[in-house]
Image 1: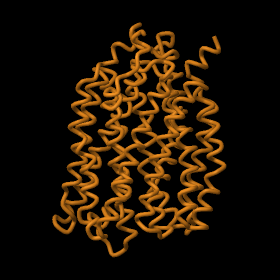
Image 2: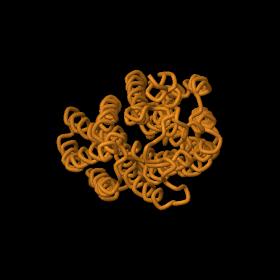
Image 3: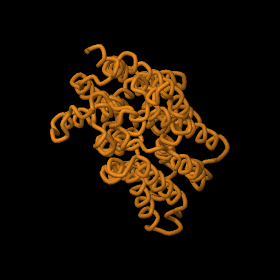
Length: 431
């Protein structure tokens, strides 16, 4: 079997995507415990005000994502994917540990929220530079006919972290009382995630470099991103960037709306903490299954059919799903509707990042993927939960999340229709 067809070692897959897992574990743990974190660092007589301040802090980290994408993503194109991945992972771990060890507002006053915001900015910088190098590495290392499957690990490992975060959150909510969760429970949950940083760095230090091999015959070039497309002609890449941002925006809003359901079930539906953490287990488990299946299907049937057909079905199901959840307010309906939305969202999302990556040349792949992803997630990832919370409060309509998500998905489906097919199986059929 040739080097191009050889499977990627499992330790390399784990090394590449450990950062993605840690990213989502930390960010979602912050989201799940945002109510408690708000009381610790932003105390107020109005619980909603503390909660909104916490969500704003959650979102401020996204402001640095484009900066990190520009610096670390371009570093991945200039000196290599491996050093860029090592740098982003190190900074990520530093930001998580620093925030966990920051004393409360009651102990150090105004310095507490300032430090928390600074650590969130550091995390945002690191995470902005994480996606580009890791996705570029996997695209260049994977066999062409399996590229969708391997890049699907980008999302599947994130949702594996979602599952772990949900299990840990559920365990803590069952064993600790409200005071303990506020005082130290959320810190313990985050530090558990930070514990993988040394292991992840050790694994990443053993990775090969794919940057300079990307254009060589012994590596795996991307069919539509080779020397046949002149580098000086930026127009095709601008089209990829704009359509990519529009598609990733809907996916980002969808992902953060889905993760918001843990808080939504507690604050809006007034369900128990145990029920809300059960949602994270559903989200993680069914997202992993749908995303891995999506990667395999996109390798077989092409990127566009696998992103568009589930996307249309999801659009038709979002509002009925939220209406059922709000109307019945039962655990069974909540879990059932959530499962259906998670499955369709997971299948539709994977071909987007795969198609974007395949459509860019190796010399700008890391930085471009990083910037496209960072712009979408920095604007809408950090703001989604805050906007949804504000819309619910201002309008008094608990279905506000459904309208917000549906609007974004309509725009994304138009972008998907305009996006060019990039799967090797489809390109081969055209020849």
